[in-house]
Length: 213
Image 1 (cartoon, rainbow, N blue to C red):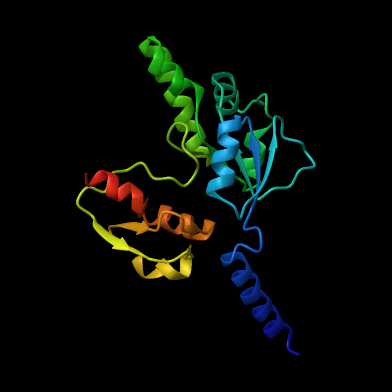
Image 2 (tube, one colour):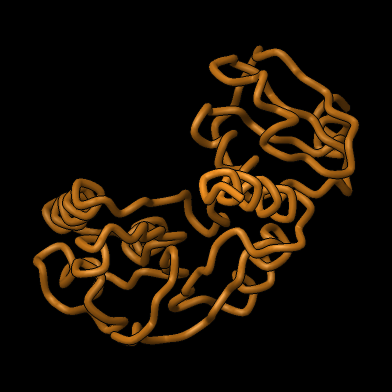
């Protein structure tokens, strides 16, 4: 049998297994995660293979690296190209690895205590440097992929399926809509990434019902 045909068939089978949740989509190294964050991401992304640790080991090989809480010290050191307490994150980004920051200490600190303007400006500058390198910052204490933007008057699109895959929502590409799914529906990681890339907000039916009251 032709090798290209075999490869094509194999890819299709693997994709189907992924969409059905029978195969891990990605292997994620999670650093500095609280117990609450661990439970949140495991519940939100059942198809991801999570590995929780406190320090990055040189012999570890994962698809992505997520930082549960980035300390001010690690923010500063990494922005200056120095090794942080969790490891050499700059080197991982240079390898092409995606590094996601779920929450950052400087944001939490500023929300609770008065901070000199010069210091706050410096922290923001460090944050911008990391983003320029390729780091992805999410809103405070929210699992990756969850959108916080209000869609306001955007159109609601209801999808009554138990499994929400990328294929089932591909027709929404480029449209300004809010996707409403059943309360207990399973959303595949590819579908979540697709919605994030296209700025499509995802809501469970219970959320829309509460908002209308």
